[in-house]
Structure formats: structure tokens, C-alpha cells
Image: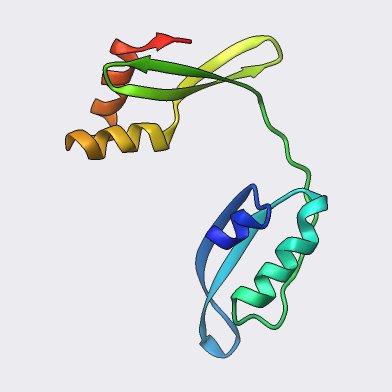
Length: 123
């Protein structure tokens, strides 16, 4: 997964599946931009045991996003806000930033988000 992200993947998922002759396998799904296809193809062949794969082109639809840096006694964190048109839908503190604080303090992700939300100064 890490090498696929390094090669330009926007998203990577693994799903356990049953292959022909009832053999276990893993379905690897990758979302990327067209200009990254060659690098991802090379990564698949060099870093896995596959001898082939299927490609399907899809359209990606996403919301407008704005990111803001939050600072406080917890350190710093990023908050992402998404919009539909000009209407703000929701904000969320980035998972990696919540997880880092949760690990450092031995607390849950929800508790970490609460600490960040209460103590944050937007910059």
C-alpha cells in the first residue's frame, strides 16, 4: 500500500476474495489520476507477485475542501472543512493528528478530538 501511495495513488484498499479454483486472493483497488498510471503499473509488477490486473476508468466526484491549521496546548492539528457549492457541510480534524494525540496521551480518538476542538486556535 505504501509503495502504491508513493507511486501516485490517491486511495488504496485491500479486500479478501476467492479466486478461481477456490484459491484465496486479495483484490487491490487503487484510485489515481491518469498521469500516474505508468508509475502505478510499474509498482504493481515490481512489488507484488501479480502477472496481470484489470483497469477500469471511473469518474471521481469530490467536495470542495479547505484545510486550516489549529494550534494549542495539544500542539498542532489540521482541520478539513468540506463544502457543497458555497454551503459548508462539515468539518473534521484529520485522523493522523487525532491519532497522534491519542497515542501520546493514552486516550481515545474521540477524546483527542474533543481536546483539540476545545483548545484550538485557528491560524
